Image 1: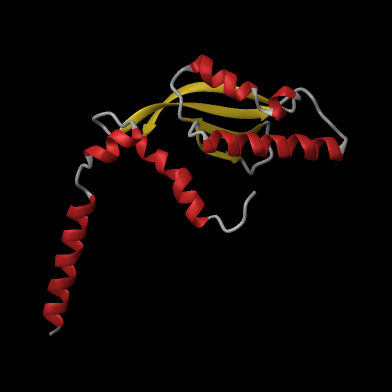
Image 2 (image 1 turned 90 degrees about the horizontal axis):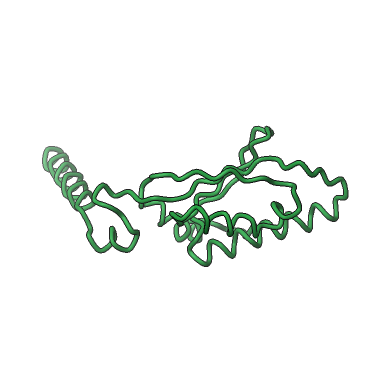
Length: 148
């Protein structure tokens, strides 16, 4: 009985590995993947800006606008990933934009209230990464208990 259980376990492990490792052309097309499962993005490094605002109320307003802008870009499918760095340096966070056009990416970045206020500056770079990143916003909705 133990041998049968072990054999069945290996069988199901093998079947699941094969089932999940097969190429899915529809998914690749949905995410804009090339033949390697990759695509072009724009990676944005958010850095501390030259403007330092001491007024807590004003900073809270700017941060709310920044977060609202992030939510808007995600809902439009333009922002795939965003988050702060936790080490308190001049490098504050990243965006990965689902855009390959640098000029268009600059327009989106420059519409952020924190950039407009000068609290953040953005450094943009073309980046080639897994097209599977396109799944992150939908997965995040499933695991997010509380809205930011």
